[in-house]
Image 1 (cartoon, rainbow, N blue to C red):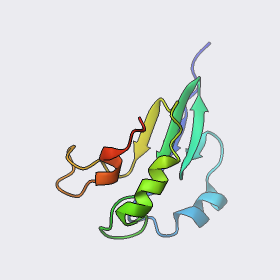
Image 2 (image 1 turned 60 degrees about the horizontal axis):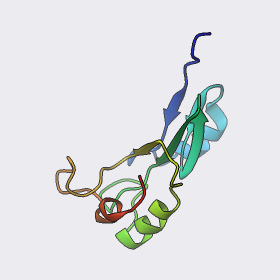
Image 3 (image 1 turned 45 degrees about the horizontal axis):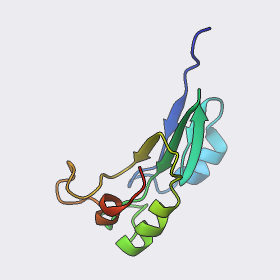
Image 4 (image 1 turned 120 degrees about the vertical axis):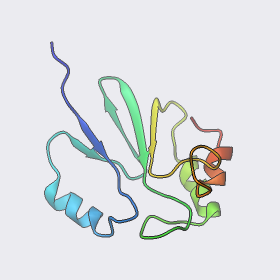
Length: 104
């Protein structure tokens, strides 16, 4: 049996109207993740669009980001974020609370 193709998406700093558009336009095997999970063929994906204050939308201060990272289930196999943890290919713009998070 051939594996099905799945598209997984999350918002970024330019997607101010993405949520409304998502509800209206996305269908089928496209999974929009905003602090949520999808399990595809037994693999648990968690997606979150939040970043430290930068530009556009999905910006939160570190104390609020810390709360978002606490939502990540401990049994997550693949974590998808819009921005990296601090110190990992971040150009100085990564999240220090994500870097300190005990989550995967």
